[in-house]
Image (cartoon, rainbow, N blue to C red; front, top):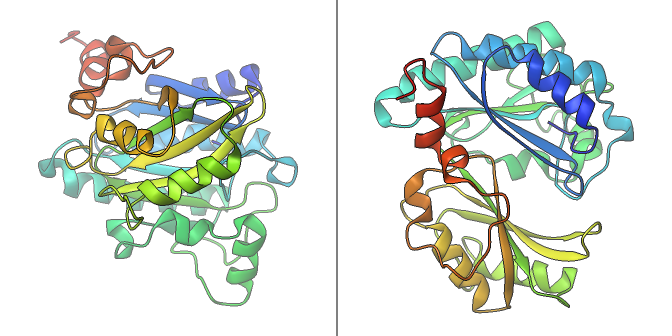
Length: 284
């Protein structure tokens, strides 16, 4: 969701989901909050719709700004599956969710990933909300569900079914600059000179902390661990700390270096397996 500063608003959206809320991660510089929900197939889409309805009633994209790319108040709503056996159900749930968001909230919904022949979020987000609105109006890009125009205040939403993606940020040691963060991101992302498989990366500057950050999405933690990401960044710049956004599979932290702090990280809360176990009715 495109809100990371108003704690009361974030709490109201979280309450509206009416589902098992495993984690909420908010960041004022990114001006985003990531809500991680757990639910049964056939029920998740309705829960996400409840939270999305609360979000678009409270977030106006015309007044929204933050360092992280975005195209809408809801912005991204993936249905995550943990094993291949659940893939079909997740794909069906994602299609239901996209249809619900578009039909009931009048927000254009775009599919990405496997449901859209591999189209990426970056392709849709390119240029931001204004450019997306222009591409829709020009017929260059058509929503998969909903109106052929951007919602006036809520923009658009991107929907997918996918395995766990690890959102992981690496803070460069001062006095690193935004330009250095961008250079490192270009080197370590897939396709870069020192590219890591399945890693998307951008360089950002967090004004509140005066920090240059390499913000990454690790799309397959089995091919590239978070330790691999840190090692790649360290080949080009000193690392001060790291940040996990949302949850991650336990295997993603295999071999993680002891000398890189991850403030706020709690294995009992932030590893998917532990969080799901704690949230289950039996507690196991």
